[in-house]
Image (cartoon, rainbow, N blue to C red):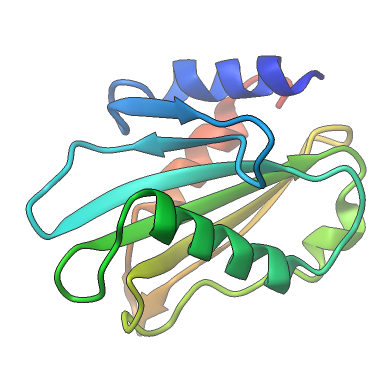
Length: 153
């Protein structure tokens, strides 16, 4: 599956019910960012990243956090972003075993509320969602359901 067709499937599945906008990027770590309507204090986004080979996902998540922070001018407490990250590529089964954790504290300008890893070759999705006890944040479960329902991920 090409990157364009994967992103197009995600656009159809997520816009307009879950996100309102999609910003496409070229020559960056990010391929694109789905954005909700901007609220005064907080914003919610889903960043999409394609990886071609297995790499250090914790460093990748940190890089994505910093890139989103800079592009969307996030400021802790004043203008925060709740971010879901969707990492996809072929043959990522080994990566799925080492998925980075979502944030457990909201002490960042960009709070990682969920990390989804999609193996497009084997149609396998793994995710981690931030939570505090039984309270889950950021609709990662709903986004994961949508990703799983998307035919031929």
